[in-house]
Image 1 (cartoon, helix red, strand yellow):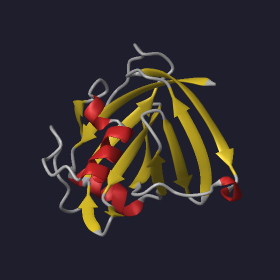
Image 2: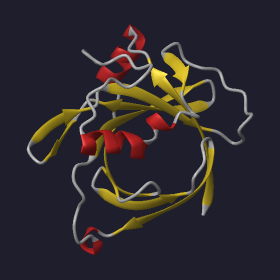
Image 3: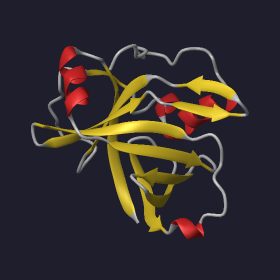
Length: 169
């Protein structure tokens, strides 16, 4: 078990960020949620089970790798994102680009925006932010992975607050 201390922001698709995402390596992540606290993740072909406690910026986190042969089924749909690691002023910012489409019962659904995360050593750690960081959404549960997943499952059509929908990144 470990503690996850994390801050989250909405990303702004600036020219700097677009250029970084065009040229940098990324990891494709597919998240399948069983409930509010349990997730199955495929990250570059490796499978992980993650269990998180409730909370906002500080949570208990259990994560362990599993063998694909241990998986009997995959829930549907999945939340798909490309993750880029952006080193900046002594921190690594995880740029999550939600651009991919998920299919559920033959219904076309997409979530298109940027969410940026940074893990910290303590909740009050001072960090300098890159220019493409927007509103802090650390305490807004509508930006949790499980909530975004529910948007796909239930087909919410209203836009996500404080998000610049992606057209070209």
